[in-house]
Length: 330
Image (tube, rainbow, N blue to C red):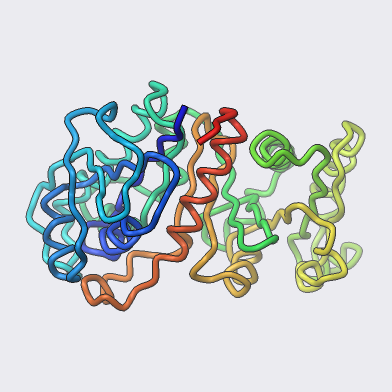
């Protein structure tokens, strides 16, 4: 049985269509089906002078093994024509319809994994739709509790909290939250990455991990008790560690993942290590989902000055996880 990957191109005015078309030129030992407006892709291919044949499908069952230079497309129609680089709230619903269809197909076992291109949260909110990000939206669709993890090279960084104002992070770090997040991270490292006994480094919330309570008590009152409880269940957890020294070879050399307490505690290091080739992996979902690690870059859309390395890495990661989870041969 061959792996079927779904690709959503994301914000139509951004670089999502560009990198999707660039990816179509690459070989792939799987089915690759892009959920997008077929005419949008044709127009962007012409704008970029990319010789990619857009092949609209009636049904996902019509998809064949990916052929370089051809992109199978399950069409979803735009609400309004797209001007490259210009955001239009009228097309916000189109972006979400593409995600809805992808989740429906994977939930119906018609495909194995979802790879998402970048979306623009602001323009979706401008359309009057409450939207904080892919991760949160997919959680609503699948009624699940997700954990965001990014990976680059051998470094994996998961987040206890995601898109929150910094002023709200401390109150959000609770014992139930940490227990849930660490449990999901540990389970998916075992199931999706085939790591039998994951070693997870856990960052403290405060500078110097609270310095014995002098710089904050979250480590003493919340983080350490949770780690002790989970260690008693057999998990291999190191921490809480000061975030400014955690990301050093001494700690990382034999670690399988890092748990950061908030978005900008962990991701600047990850993106420094692998920007342009990092992958966003959503754990805790009943579906496999990977994504690019960058935004819509509307100023670069249609210029040909973009790289598709992160999308290539996201597709490769989705393929590897699918093979492990479904015991696929192709």
